Image (tube, rainbow, N blue to C red; front, side):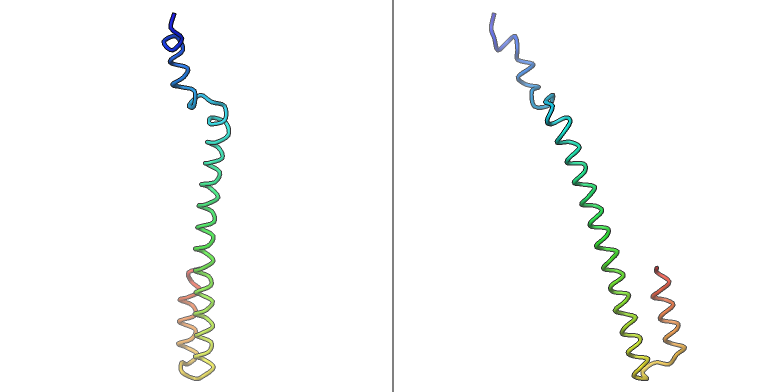
Length: 84
């Protein structure tokens, strides 16, 4: 009776069948991936909103300085705000 031959299957499958890997690591990895995706999407949306607000500020400055008239300002403002 050879010990390695009798229990070879158990030695090879130990990591895959382990409690820690099956019930702790896989859900933890999945949870971290979901958080990573959420943070990425949130940053992208916030960056887009920040760029739109900067564009609106620039448009307001152009209107105040007299470079563009009210009609052009409203058209450009509607184009920027229509994305929201």
